[in-house]
Every structure is written in structure tokens, then in C-alpha cells.
Amino acid sequence: MKSFKSYISEDILTEAKGPTGAQWESIITHQLNKLLKQEDSDPAAVKTSNKFKDSTDPNYHKIGKKIAQNFISKFGDNLMTTYGSGGGKKNLSSEWVTWGGTNGTPKTDMYTSAYNISLKKKGGSQLASGGAGESLATFQAALEYLAKAEKGSKNITMIMDKIEQNFTKVMLKQSKTEIAKISKDQKKIDSLDPKDQKEIQKFISTEAFHKELNKELKEVLKFGENKDFMEYYVFEAMSGLKKFANLQAVASVCVTFDPEKGGIEMINVTPDGSSGGLNVNSPSISSELKTKAKSVKVYSAWKSSKGKPYSTIRMNSYDPTEKDSVSLIDCTLDSIIGEVLQSDEMANKVHRTLNEDLVMLDEIAVLGRVWNKIKGIGGNALKWLKGFVGKVMKKIEVAFEKIKKLGAKMYEGLFNFMGIEISSVKEKVPSDLQGFIYGTAD
Image (cartoon, rainbow, N blue to C red; front, side):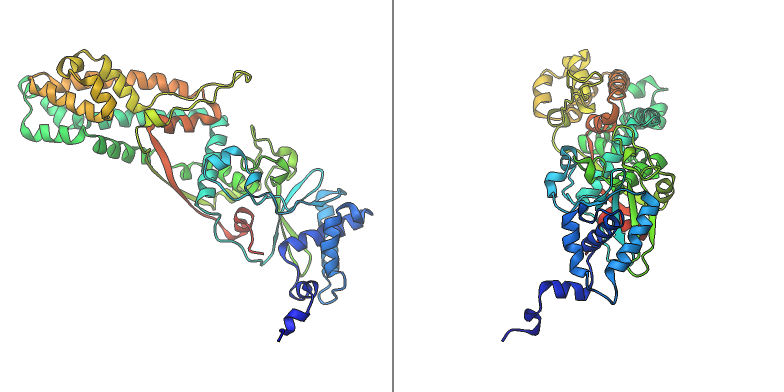
């Protein structure tokens, strides 16, 4: 036996439970165009909207007309078109996909000639998150905005200075204690006691080196505490400017509508809410969004890149047709250590299979072997290590100067050089932004 529900048309059921978020977009668009005397400007919107034409309690067209009047008062006499939710992953920019993003749902729900509007129903069901890949991609996008900004060069210079300091501190970890004490006694320099030998050897191992360096870097890479970064993060999460290849899919203003009283509340993404401010090379962020960014929290975790960074993360973005295009950094911290080892006279003298070992082993492990052999022949190992670090630092400084010239790719180049990557990004978003950032359930 067929259920009662099976005898009822889909349209009647839709009307009975009320419009979904997408259907409200059509109702509002239809009513707005009708007020502007061009009712059939968006035929698809008219078709969907008319499913609710005969509704009287509540009268969805009457409410839609009131919302439309509020839209006209805010956005002017501009015809509106529904964007639709289609597109999927093909909607995304190639960069976004590379960064791990997969959600191709457009930010724009409807648009006029001057505004790309993201719409949310007041009291509607909101999604709790956008997924790990989306957060990672948003993080990467915010880093590119930050790198291109006026303060970007200053920020990365500060980070690089701290990395240089931390590298020296880590590489010569004993300098403030044991090395400083031992260096006053030449006999101790030439013949370290077992305890000091054990500590130095324990440190000069690949795992310990990277673990210690990454621990120091965590204090430098707290982008969630950077005001400018957080503003760009929220801007990208709300607009999707770097996310979408099609600018029409990018939101310039976010609107919450009241499905009962017809009121609307706006959050401008660009300074005046217009799509004219959506410039990926120089985005303009509204003062409202900057204020909202203060209530968003972002936490990032970092890890060492898998494999040998030098062989796996060579990158090149050079385009001879672009005047300002430059190659991404083609060396890493590890590769510099290897190069200095190869050219070091003492290293070659004590370690005859140096080049072969550099092919088979990682650079830090080979450095440890050289260290052991210098100690074994009674050489001044600590003096040699200090000199070695000095040579490495000179090459690091040259690499950093190249990284500073990478523009939007500065941070990407820096992370490639250091052999680190973002392993996860977690965020806390207030409820008034959540629906615009993550989407709504209906």
C-alpha cells in the first residue's frame, strides 16, 4: 500500500515545510527583479519562487518582497541573478587544490552588477566546520596575502632573523654552558670528557637536530597571533578570493535575512561591500571584517617535511613573460650543510667517503660522522664546528635574501628552505560568521 506521502506532489511538500536556503535566494531575487519591473530577468529564480506563489500563511512572496526592498535600499536599483550551487571542484583555483582544498561550493549565492552576495538565513542550521583541507588552504592563502602586503617583508625579515639566531643556538647548543666553559681551557678543547662528548654527539644527530630546531621555530611561526595574518585569514574564509578561479563565485558582502520579519543584516567583506574591491593582488578588507577577525582563533601545527627536502622540494615559478617573476629558492638548509661539508678541507681530509655518504645519508648524519673523526684524531672539534657553522650561516643569509624577493611566495619559499610544512590548522569561529565561512545545512 502506498503511503499518504506518496500521493502528495513534491511541490506541495516543499511548500509545506517552507523554502530551503537556496529557494529563499530565488524568492528574494524574483521579488527584487519584479520591483524593478523586470520580473523575468532570472527565469530559473522565477520558476523556483513560483512554487511558493500561493502560500498565504506565511506568505513567502510577501516576506521575500520586504527582504527585496531592504536589498534595494542597501544595494541600489540593480537587477539580481542567482548564482547557483553548481561547479564542484572544477570551480576551484589550481592553487587551492594544491593546498588541499576540495569544497567547490561558491561563496556567492546571488549577484548584481556591483555586488556578489553571500546569503544566510537567520536561525538557520549552520555547518560546524569546512574540513581540514579547507582550513589548510585558507591558511596558505592568508600567508600569500601577508607576504604581498606592505608589512610582509618586515614580518618575514623578523622571522628570518629569529631563524638565524635559533639555528646558531641549536647547532652550537652547548655554547652558553659547556662550550663556553671548555673554551677557556685548551686541553679540554682538545680532549672533551666523556660527558661532553656524549652531549655533543647526542645533539649532532638528524632527529635531535630537527626536533630541537622545530621546537625553536614554533615560537616564531605563531601566525594566529599576528593581527594582519588573522585579518587576511578571515577575509579569505568569507570571500573565497584565492579559492575560486571564477571571480563571480567570490563574495564581496555577506547578508543575514530574517525569514519571518524580512529584515537584513550586512557584513561588508570589501570596504563598501562591492565586488570592485575583490583584487587578488591587493585585497581591500572592510573595517567590520577586521573587527570580526579579533574574535577568530587559529592554531597551526608544524612538522618536518618527509624525505630529503633538497631532492623533493625543488620548486620553480619562473615565467619569462612576467616582468617580476622569479624562481623559488632551489636549496634548503640541509643542502647548504651538505655543500659546505663537500667544500670543507678538514671534512674531506678525515672522511674519505664524504661524497658517497652525502648521497646515501642525510647531511646532519654525515656531519655527525665528520665530527666523530675529527675528535678521533685529536683535532680541535669545537673550533672546527664553530667555523663550519659560520660558513653555513653566510650561505643561509644569501638564501634568505633570495627568499625575500619571492613576493607572495615568500613564506612558501621559507618553509621549503627550512624543510618544514604545516601539518594541521584548527580554528574557532563565532556563530555570526560560521554560516558564511562553512556554509549552511539547508
